[in-house]
Structures are given as structure tokens and as C-alpha cells.
Figure 1 (cartoon, one colour):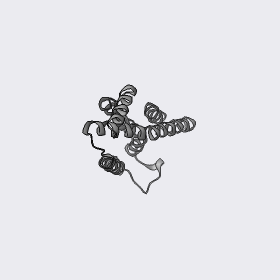
Figure 2 (tube, rainbow, N blue to C red):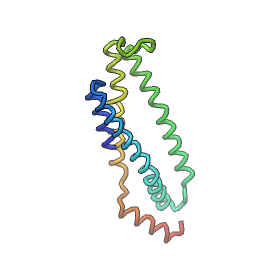
Figure 3 (spheres, rainbow, N blue to C red):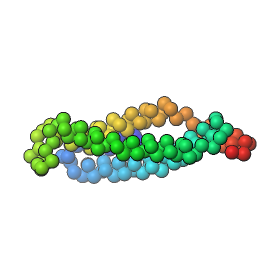
Figure 4 (cartoon, helix red, strand yellow):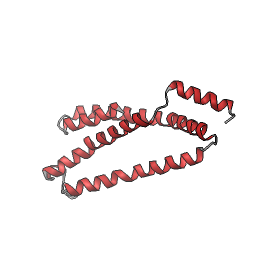
Length: 150
């Protein structure tokens, strides 16, 4: 996630002036997005195991439903943020980028750089506060689940 945040900040700092640098930042974005996607499901499995151990009842279906709801809610936020930013920056959808007012150009740069970086930073902080499963703890959970035949 740190790679993704740094890539968004690099795009912001370059501001469209150094095209090769933006390509490099996009490559970093790809690595960050790929890493996040690869890590998500093992973390999800660990969380399901911990909840199963705490409740002594397998609840994969309920947890998957909650995950799907939160995931769909995440798909709803970007269009709302885009409309909000374009509205307050007076973006003209019929004008080219070069004829947009300065505020609208800054809004576009914010949408592809520091707004995503802030959202991901908040996610990283929340994840580090609430996700307390270490490698040792997940092994203990799996062993306890085996003993309980869950």
C-alpha cells in the first residue's frame, strides 16, 4: 500500500509535466494494486478463522455478505467524489483540458493524485489499528480450530 501512496504522490508532484515519470508512477500503482489484491484473500481467510474460533460457529456466509456489501459501497464512493470535485472546481465537460479553468485542472490532478493517496493512507492506518493477527496468532488459531473440528 505504501508503494501505491507514493505513486499517487509522485503523480501529484509531477503534475503532468514529466510524462516518463508519470509512466513510472503508473507502474508502481500497478504493483501496489496487485499486492493489495493478492494479500486481501489470505487476510480475509484469517479473519474468518478468528471469528469462527471466537463464536465456535462457522460464519463464512455472513462474513462474505458483509464483505460484499462493503466492497460494493466502495464502488459507490468514487463517482460521488468525482462529481463533488468537478462541481466545486467548475469543471466543464465540453472543454478540453487546456481550456479548463485553473481550479478545474487542480481538481483533476487532485482526483488522480492526492485524494486517492489520502483515502489509502486512512485505510492503512485503520488496518494497522484493527488487524492484530500475527503469524504466530494465526497458527494458534488454526491449531485451536483443528482441535475443535471446525
